[in-house]
Image (cartoon, rainbow, N blue to C red; front, side):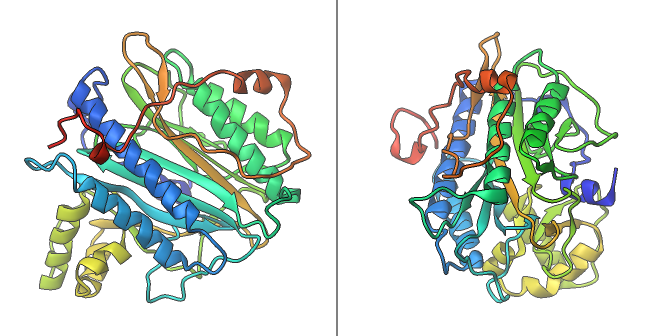
Length: 388
């Protein structure tokens, strides 16, 4: 596996005890999943609504993160239940693939007309995760469809995600998704981005080892979907070669704790930073912007914690200049008792695009299948659930 693929996957190396698997027949577990999905769905809509020409990307990312933290704090407040971000709000523009969540004191990007904008975020309640992503275009003529290569990559990625969601069923093989995703990419003349993948998720584990690469990855082996599994379908396509790389112009701001790394810091500031990260973000990725919002003094402690390997950076990943990248992500669960699968992430319409590409008949038939969608209502405004 390439260095890029390893850094993008960031698989948690903790021992995987049997109790990290989800019992989806447990009503409390389902309530936590539904709560995380509701907050993620609403945060995504909030950020997308505010993605307008002239909007500051740093402020938009903070808007999404603040909303998630505010809502998550209202539920399951008894005891020591962890809740909050499972993935910080990232807004990646045009050829930027992922992990762009700039600091407010940077020269953060400002959205411009015609931009292809990808919004990605995640929420966790007691380690039960819902992640999602959506792509839009800031179309200067919204009554007319977007055409050309932007339309090709968006239409392809959207259809590939919808097709993949329909293939998440007990007994299906992960290779079916890989083959379908690549067939759709070929039909539209675009390429899956190397180093990106869909992942099985477990409690407190954002990216389990079972992965479905969008592009060929010989280190990934096929697996069969089973009951009580939760999968993050993550489709990322590019108009370019799909050979993304670490940006040399965008500083890393997204970090994740490596629980297997040895601790030991010389500076008191570093120990304080580590303790704050552990308390507020646990094992999930976070933005240094959010860390500095808690206390600007963490700017002094962060470098040593990163240098020690206790925190691993998720660098900003980019394609070649002039190319466009589209991403669509959704969380899907395979229910127990042979009751089928269910989509946790709320379905959103494809942006108004017109592509000359078209899917083959077998894909068209697959896309016509109904998908069961969870009723993930905001629990803070819904009665009848004990969320204390």
